[in-house]
Image 1 (cartoon, rainbow, N blue to C red):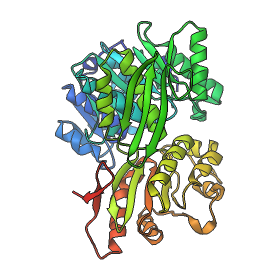
Image 2: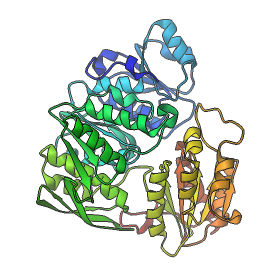
Image 3: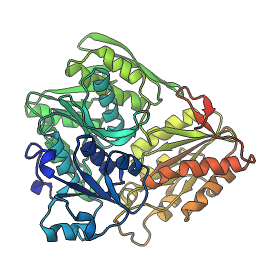
Image 4: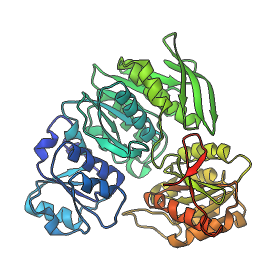
Length: 491
């Protein structure tokens, strides 16, 4: 994708877009953008083929949702917005160009919405959704009412986007297609830099160069934050410092500007002590487990400190952080089996998530239901993904989702399952999505933890899994899970 031809932030405003139509409006990123425009009072329509959960909320806000793709959907429209998943020969793309309508990539439309705000952009190979959510909640706790667009929904807020009245605009910046290079942040945060999206960048060196370019676009009056514990983050900091840029870092490393110590994680959450410039910030607690979540929160604490927000606001927001949907999300309990949903599909984030779920499982077993999201990532990082899945006791694997990708012979989940270091009887490839609940119900027993992981459609598996587990008991009541991990009646 040639983002050099895209319209950068600051060139136009959201109001300049007129009546906006989003192709594939049900996807997480597009639904968030649509919600932002609707809460800003702009006329929005969108087209979809599947009734995604986000669509009901968009309709409630006044959005017009077409459950088909056709030329008539563009009647009265001024601007058509597409994502990288939409091919250029899509019916509505072709029609938009024929009519001479303004056609923008999602990142260009989002950049227009940032105009006039101080943008806090969070980038990184993984961890950026949780970090963006944490920073948003800290700003809200501090009373600044930020605008935000996140690639996920904050669990108890129920939204991944909002048009606020404050000066800050928090955004998750996507590096996968280079589109983050059109943003002009006041604050740039890079959680980590690891090999990924090699279909776009070719190799790690080019990927790191893109992150350096992104960080260099930060306002001179703003600041850049990276993780001192991540090798790629450290190299990025060194590159920027060599160019005369001040960079702030966080982590457990001795030279981190915000230093974490005494990090403790359990099923009930994670805690650590934080200090910066010789000043103790006290203990930071989160009700969600995982050392990786502690690192994400440290980025939020450091950003709040540099934005001169009260540290107490950061402590309060993080102490009440409910998590993000599809990020270690507890779906419920049925017949003694605890079910989670987790978006992770990069091997590092998969490993961290599964290690944390292993802690939660305790003496029980960990059963993973995984649908790889992207074919190129499954191919390029097959050994690393297989090693992560090897943490499981049992694996149920579906075919790669791969929207818009062409699978070559020998590629996909058939090759992946062979590489997973589990005995044959503890791993299975399930070709039909509808057969997964019965397979899990056959394998799971009371005390086990089941996690659905990977591509967006797998997030819809939670309820069918719970129903299948309940069917073993004759239909006893399913239980939800409270913030402390205790079972509570669902619904």
